[in-house]
Length: 120
Image 1 (cartoon, rainbow, N blue to C red):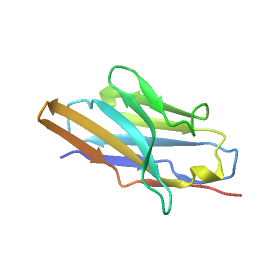
Image 2: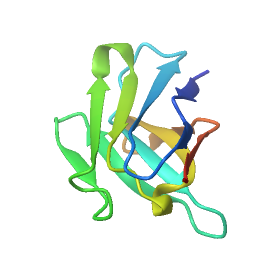
Image 3: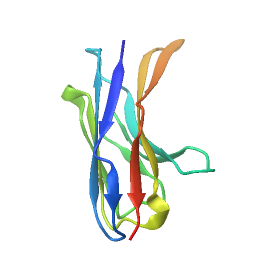
Image 4: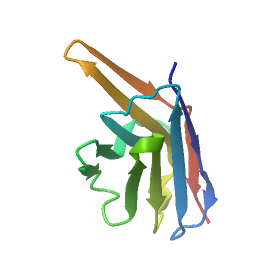
């Protein structure tokens, strides 16, 4: 059974930085993609950034130039370096892993989330 654990959230002042970490355990297979999502109060969960196993990465327009996603495929770990944080980045951040087995079999896993609060 795959288990995902995030860490690194907390309270930071506007303009500050945080680094989120995520590790997936319980499988020896690597994931097709891993990504970070966030959900602010009263809003839908949205993609922040993701990393595909071909090496490509994608970012939400709102975080481009400020956040950097990185991945250790061998360790099934994912990181998100967040710089120049803004109040609107406040949300619960979730790590996601997508495992593709075949055309008819795939799985999506979520962590429990880590709170990021940007406030003075």
